[in-house]
Length: 454
Ligand code: PFF
Ligand code: NA
Image (cartoon, rainbow, N blue to C red; front, side):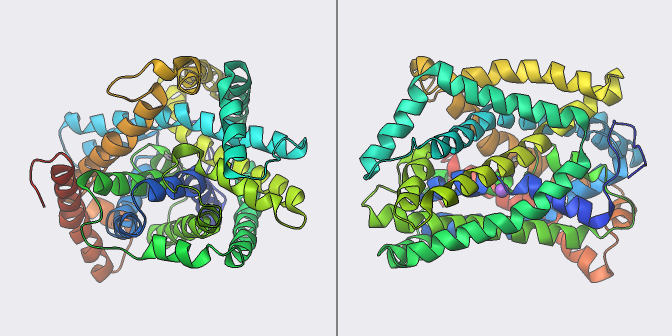
């Protein structure tokens, strides 16, 4: 951990260091908060199936590509893309992909801190006995009340912003590695306990059916795009995070194996979260399409009925908050690395400067739940727009660009060296990145935009 790569970061301590950090980035609110409520909103099984297919067919090859770009370019995504393109004699226009992903990460973080703020405020409520209600309506009322006061909600999202910037400013790779090391197994155990509880709640069969049974045609074009967008979101793709972390990956470590591990962990946690939450939803007659408040209204109800429920609840929200923080850090790393690299800023100052801008934008997102609930465009609040633009457009389009760049523009030797796969593996990766990824993304877009009716 002594090599400095020029962006104020040091290399990860071997392959495990990177796996842990990338897992910390991937596993977060996307798995436990977003996956269940999106699955609920888009009707269950078909959404889950498309999501899983997108992880395997688009997510995995793209994650390998991003890590390879980061390590080859050894800089922030902006610089890394530029360098890799230059090395192949490609046009300067491709560097827009680096910019896009950096901006995308920033935009995601602007609403992510609000959700992480929910998690932190629920931790506080759990500790102080504020999560007591005996019905879904009661829990919903607690959620609403928590949102209604901008000073309250703003306090929690501001606290998350501060914590994120504090950690990022220090560049504490070791801290990330250490916390992910116990948070991941901890989260799996907590979810297993919740699933165990769900098995006896009377809603488990319905939950399994909801998540895994699907009828063809159950998913709209809009749902397809949502599922693909979520695959990007959950794996932290095309948002600067994985590429920025790839820049700190030591040479010679297997990118493919790393990617598989991250994708498997991430998928496991998401599916477990669904299996933990939907039984509670069905057992209590709650609507799966209740939106972003879904887990905050349902899980506390389950904890309230469990032995040692309060203790488990506290542990759960501690871990959820930590999972959110290890993801939050990764979203802003690209911006920080870029400021350090191109403006010669000290890391800490870059973090505080970025933090101020982030605080302003995230405050607008926070206000979407109270004062600014009426500041809408096309029916979407600021919070909704930040989510919508990034997951539906910036990430899939950024992914499309990266796939085309890697598949058709770069010299084959370059990524072949970086990925270091056996011939057959390399051919498979190339096939996926050249044809499967771009085609899948384009077809889903066409369908979602209603240009064609598939
Ligand atoms: N993958 C994270 C999650 O599932 O919570 C969210 C995320 C992290 C998205 C980093 C984008 C990113 F760059
Ligand atoms: Na995730």
